[in-house]
Amino acid sequence: MATETTGVDRLNETVKALQNGLTALPLSAAMDNTEAWQQEFLQSGIPGLQDIAREIGTLQSLLTASKLNGPAIGSSLSLLGTQTNQHAFQAPADQQKALRALGDLLLRLAGDLQAVKGK
Image 1 (cartoon, rainbow, N blue to C red):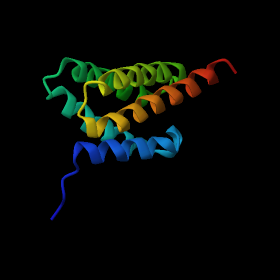
Image 2: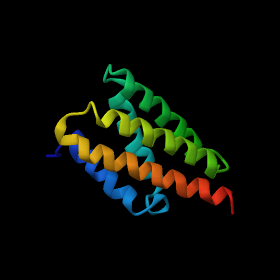
Image 3: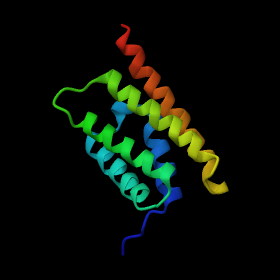
Image 4: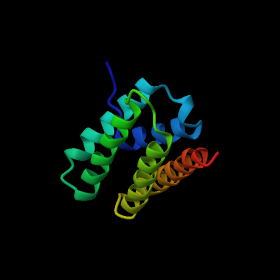
């Protein structure tokens, strides 16, 4: 019998996966993960989460483009990091720390991609 992953578990798994860097995460796993988040957020009825879901869609498009655009991916990750940190303040107490960690991680990864542009 398969066990259903809770939002808190998926949040912790997402943070752990991203801590190893963007290139350590296979594209198929990243797409599966973002798709699960996008669907949950779209169905939430919460405007802030629906905004995040739309940006996840933008990120998915960028990740599946024929040519990857690092600065554009960095910009999308930056927006997602900012949105995630903003949502952390309204999230249930048991999710706030992990959401802030995810938001900060997305911002750091975005900065890494945007720094490559200048090299």
